[in-house]
Length: 112
Image (cartoon, rainbow, N blue to C red; front, side, top):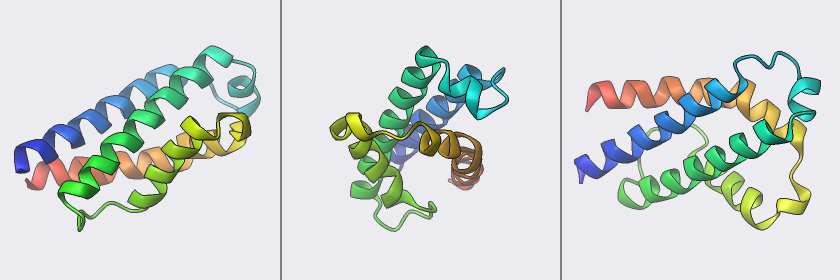
């Protein structure tokens, strides 16, 4: 089971790395909002992160990841509520929550 957990953690870190690459030259929200290609790429990777997190919670429900359930819920929103996705909310996820998640996952992988 630990091997599967580490694979899922690694998958999430890969998605985070892609999000960082997609947005590395985007400095302000207006630039992000004007770039539909980057928005779609970021949203797809957030969806994958949410799916991996959902699998992680099934395997290891006590895993120490802040807002794990919110991450899963965000995935559902992006997929099923595509018409109500708020670009500003995704921007906040990129700038505020992704760095925290990256730090937490890096610590989990190092300690396993």
